[in-house]
Amino acid sequence: MPESPRRLFSASPDPGLYRPFSLRWLYTPYVIGFSHRLARGVPNTVPHILHRETVGPVHVEVGPGNGHFPARLPHDRPIRALHLLDHRSGPLQVCRRRSGDRWPVRAHRADVLDAWPVPESHADSVTASMVVRALPGQGIGAKAALFDQAARALRPGGLFTGATILTRGVAPNRLARRLMSHYNTRGWFAHGGDSLADLDLALAERSTGVRVDVHGCAALWRGEAR
Image 1 (cartoon, rainbow, N blue to C red):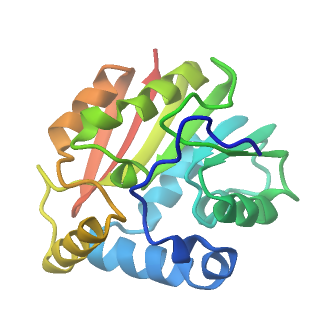
Image 2 (tube, one colour):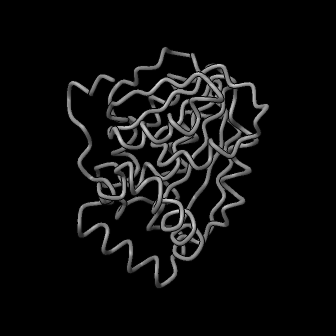
């Protein structure tokens, strides 16, 4: 799996959580069970439904984590190619192991802010769940390369979906504020300037029929490629 020739983005959640052992045994209870529901305020039924309704025959999963949501897609989902994109080997290995017996999986170790190793107008769907929060830069505009690459990879009418944590234009609870402060101080996240208005703008500039739903301090979106 080729690495990006330029750099691998530096601001990212605790690398210990993204080692294979942690991804298998800790990621689901801590990130999906605890953080999603109690800190971010996202019912896990929401991302499950988003995946089920939007994943197409050629799908790109950016930052797949431990592959929790793709693994819970219906077993008869006709996926011809599942592309996994991450700058770490752990998520690629674990997600490939979980889904590789169901669909053809292509794992790409690369920086999501660089050119993606996915052909132009190739994908029916792209999902970037909880990725933008960890990208370096002040504000959504500084992370626009991810949105550009998603638009490039999608065929016209293809679906771009995702989720991120915001600090402006949302109402985080006390636990979320404490965790966000801790993660940003440690350099695991870089979303101190990420706002709902800027997310809306980044999506509207590249997609049509955009819908953004806010749950707590998290925003989940979907839109169609132009």
